[in-house]
Structures are given as structure tokens and as C-alpha cells.
Amino acid sequence: MSCAVACSPVSRLVLAQRQHVAPFKAAAPLRLRRAGAVARRQAAVQTRADAGSSSNGAGYVEEQSFRIEQVSFGSILSPVGIGLMTYGFGAFFNLLPGGDVSSLLLIYGFPITLLGFALSYAQLKPVPCKSTQEALRLRDSQATDIQKQVREDVTRYRYGDEQHLDEALTRIFRFGQAGGIPRRLCPILTGLREEVTDGQYTLVLEFATKKEQMTQEMWDQRQEKIQSFFGPGIVATLSPTDQGMDVALICDGSGAGRGGGEKKDVLPPLMPGMKPRQQA
Image 1: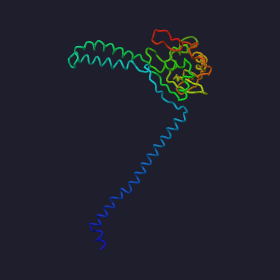
Image 2: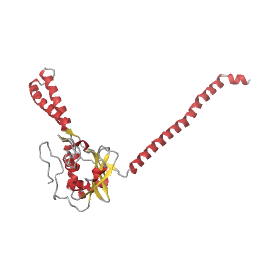
Image 3: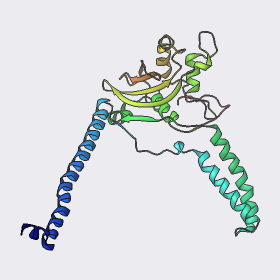
Image 4: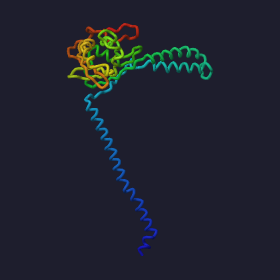
């Protein structure tokens, strides 16, 4: 009797439905556990990221400003010139409309292309600049004229210069002269930071150097020279880093060096062959 009931079609159908539903009942908690584990991992990653950003104490932000000097003219002129030349050739061979102006397109496209390539070859890319919110608030009220011009000069494209602040570094380190250092040891400016030190606006110059040849003593011997060169109105401090040296130009709170006072030659010329710029 029991065998007949167990083997009946209705019993087999009920048994199959139970076997079919069981995996879903077991799979639902499994999916929930996996989703919870993924959520916990994402939360942990976000917590570590927040802790990392807060542990550096800087809170750097990206300044939302646009300056035409931060645009590479070579990257604009090159595609424009190539486009004019390409269309000019196509129109000249009747592959494109505009055969009447094909000669003009070729005449103007060729020099524009050459100029774009020349500017792209000679350009010096701007260095990245990181700023804190507090430093941005104090910049206009505390930054000296030289700090402002240094920041604006190195955060734009330059043409024909070997590196940023080349004129300033040449005068400070006296490359190839008596009491100076070899040119091959010249520090390379790799970045800027705007920070606040004891309530004073600070512009930090990040330099990369050859640490096995550029010693701490070489920097210490020129600390006063750096301070007087980028002064007045600042105090220069040196901080060794893994890449080289950080030179912090800290406002001294005296207000000197602001509003068109006496300045020094700090920045390189606008173009090769011109005299170094005077601070106006």
C-alpha cells in the first residue's frame, strides 16, 4: 500500500516540486550573505581611503580656475594645420569639394603645422600644484608678489626653457662656477604645494635630485641664499624627501614683498634671448 502511494503520479509530482524548490530556499540566504560580504568589503575600502586622506592632514583640493597659459598651443596648432593640409590635398585632387581654395588651405596649413610641431617640441609642461582650502583663503591676503609669480610661472606651458625656474636655480647654485655645483646635479622642480604653516601662507617647491650626489650639506649652505632670493617677506625651510628636497617659502607676517615693493630677478625670460624679467 505504502509503495503504491509513494509510486503514484501525484506523489512523484509533489516530491519533484519539493526537490525543485529546496535549492532556491538554500540559495536565497547564500546570495544575501554574498551581497552583505561585498557591501562590507566596499565599506572597508572606503573607510581605509577616508582614513588615508585624513591621515596626511593636507586635505588638498583642485583649484577650479582657467588660464590661457595653461593650454598647449602646440596641441592646438598641429591638428589645425594637419586638417587644413589634408583637406587642401583632397580638394586639389578633386577628392573633396572646394578646389578653388585648395591652394590657400595648403599655403596656410603647411606653416601652421610646422609651427605646431615646433611648439610641441620646445614646450615645457606645467608642474602640478596642490592646494589646501585654508591656503587658498590666505593666498590673496598673505602671498608675496614673488610667491604669486613663481606659482603662476611654473603652472603654465613654457617654450624654449630647459626646466622651470632655470634662471633662479642658476643664480642660487652657480652651476659650473667657483663655489657652485656641476650642471648635471641641477635640482628639477616636480611639483608645488600651497599649505598653511602656523597660520601663514606657504608655497612648497618640490625638487627631485640625485641624492647620491646632491647632499644635504649642499642645500644647507644655500638656505640663506634661497631665502634672500625669493624674499623679502618669506622664511625658507628645507625638508628632505624620498625624491629630493622640499623648499618651503613661508610668509613671515611682516607684509614685506607685497604691493609692488623692491623685487629681484626671479623668473626666466619670456622667450629665449630676452633679459630676465624684473619684478614690477
